[in-house]
Length: 458
Ligand SMILES: Cc1ncc(COP(=O)(O)O)c(C=O)c1O
Image (cartoon, rainbow, N blue to C red; front, top):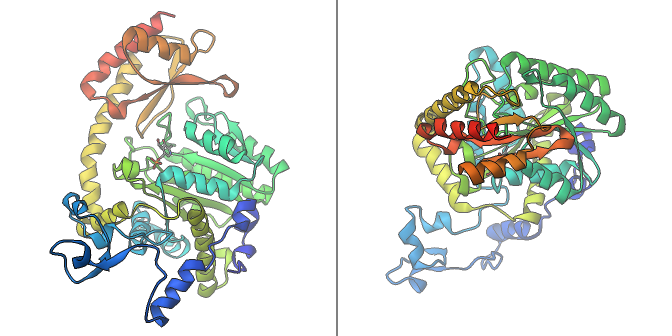
């Protein structure tokens, strides 16, 4: 495949060597497609098929994928749905349904018809990944060479570091996430300035609601953030690729904070602030083990002149993403792709939101409870990070008095309470992440009481 259209966009220059090199060759898919139309006898597909009656007692005369009879005891979905491979980028119907879901999640109103039309036209059809983690891995690999920098907050999900440092060999430019209980936009701006001096692209990773803090920007903070990214892009004249990790997207418990992904506002910018949405069914639809995530890229109208160019550009991007999927995981779990398809087709987005609302309410009560209990602790050696959503709260500990790991060990041994310590003193992080998502509300006061007692031991 030629990449004439993507090469004309700022996206291309931001790609890593892998990103530039990777593509999905015609190979098996080319020959299978041709065989379907042109051949009388087809021997292209690497999956066993047969007449059902030839391998299942009492089976039909249908030509189906060969399967073990016992499989059918465990699913109402037909074997034709759950046995075959899906296409590399995922089942097209599921991908299309997720695109509609992304549009719905923008909460567009009539006032925002430009947002809606831009979304409909200028986002790629999501490709399906092995959970959000795999989407993050793919996109980091597509944009980061070894030794390239990615900007990240100092408080972040630990697995980013496994991907960025240990796997890719890239580097992080971290910035202090908060300044006086607000997002440290100034710090982020300085990090961008620093990287703009040494790199032709800026790659940034944002995650709201955040793991480990539960932070979601207030609406005015979010506008400042978007404005700053826009201004920085204009000043440095380099593409800013923003990886938007939306793993916890629907779990927002306060009214004055951003109630939709920052992806949407970034996509609205005409400047080359290029948002890439990474979301999935794992937390969002509460199917953690389903391992289905999505990568969706926000394109800019200025990159293309007409509809044909737009379609060609989307095809080229899709080919690169599929090339990456093919080379790493080949394709994703078909059962869960079918399950999501059915879930949306038979219930619709509204019903899904309604069912999930019950869980949102449960989590919100725990959120209110843990924040109220933590507030009661009167101890100058701790502080709680601003939090409005997600699954966690983060309690900072004064590193001169208590080291997070030591504290976690003490808490576990003496008070039988398990939390996650995060101790990265070189990034000014020393605290504990409490996953209140998995603690019953009734137990939260006791949990906080024990944390308080443990604090008093230092
Ligand atoms: C911030 C963040 N992003 C992504 C993920 C991974 O999600 P998935 O289970 O879909 O791979 C997690 C899971 O803990 C997370 O906390």
